[in-house]
Length: 190
Image (cartoon, rainbow, N blue to C red; front, side, top):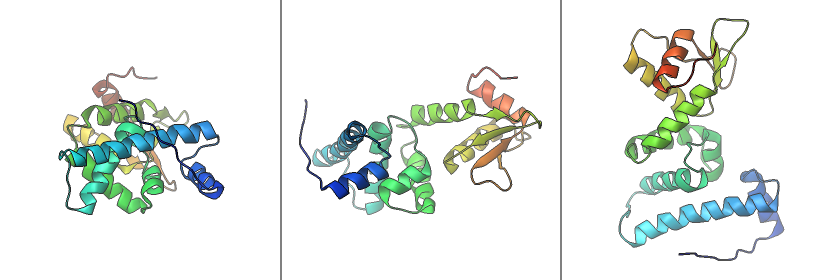
């Protein structure tokens, strides 16, 4: 079933939306608004047919983020800042809601979580001057989950640690990198 509707914005609202949603053209804004609309529609549809009726506001926000991951973020776990931008919440609140939905919807998001973590491992870069690897992580959830995987594989493996003096760069020791590559079936870069 195809559903269409038209929205009218004041120019200032449109520019604000373009800024928040990181759109530089009308076409990109239209695409992102369509994805947001699909996510919102799924939330309301599930409520109307009685599949997802919540009594707590927190549950609604969690289900909303679950739908945004499915439709707006196209099956990827978003950076904490993107959640902050959309929900108008702090980074701490963003981390809490991500942890909560990753637990509550863990089976629904199993493939999403796995592919997002694999993508993080594929983004690990070897530091040519030093004997370790670096990874920029914009969502604390990824670091925690990768460390959990390492711990389940071998408790003697070094954990992924934040690089001193950086905002979101993490250090990965070679043994941990190699084990993550094996876990995610990624060819090891030498």
